[in-house]
Length: 433
Image 1 (cartoon, helix red, strand yellow):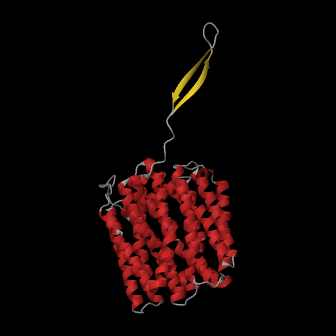
Image 2: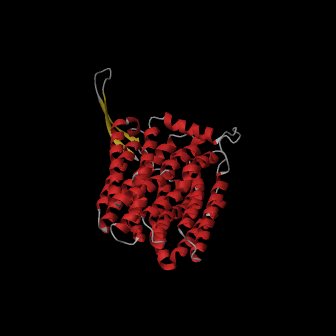
């Protein structure tokens, strides 16, 4: 782009000044790099869509099966969600270490096939009318194990497949895949369940998981940076990743807030809200798919905004502000006794959630060396998924005493107060990029 400028020069030996026109050529601002132009990342992203749809549908479907199919209470629902996520608490750290050492494509293919077979086996048991609460617990443990091993591998692959300029775009695009799943998972599962019953839902999830393996078959993954590094114990490998997080003044409080979310906001919204819809508002538990879809729409909108803006400064500030907004929306959801306002609040929570997801992942992956990425993302998965079952179990027990609404709002208050205190006390996280 050419720009005409007028300049005046002073200080000639004669004491005169000279005015002249100068044409300056400037380059337009570069557009944020689009990670989907990278064929390897595109294959992973297409696979992730199906995987995330099943992952989000599972939590919803197992809760729906327990509440409506077996006629149990929010306590039993909390137990089912607890056992679904429990394997993550014990396996993700191992999976993170494996991701830094072993064939990542083989790990993904094996766990995804295993997950698809578990879904198919569940469909067979439902069709034979053999599902009881103990059977649900056993199935959720198997399904949770398959998912837990694959998640850190997926997250660690993103910075390995794209260059630095594409990293933030890749994180935002991957968040869109998660968002699509948040919208489509419960909604499609509800539609399939209404048409074909609970066994039809599990056959659908099995097909989605197994068909996604096609993308992995042609996915090319670069070799590890140091494949001949001596093997150490899982404890030693994990300790190195923990030390990296604790030694970083920005990552340390960030991981602390992620841990807080796993005990408060995440289980309150993803688990207890479904029981709230049934027990307090008096709707079918399956109708909780609507606020989940609304939340997913909000995340999609804000993720597109983040993707178009590209790399952003002060991601830590955006992350904490998004968490404050999400806590506020959750608090208000707990106060609602009618259905429509919850759907509206879920949309606003999703708008904040897009920034929450993109900022925390961007901060972690931009401030972690590639050699540690699998293990650090294993810690991240532990914070985001491995601890949430314990929060779901605790909130389910509290809800059985004080009710679902006060439990949801109380969890939101605890989250809000803590993140505000962190915002004013941890300058390193506020300015982190």
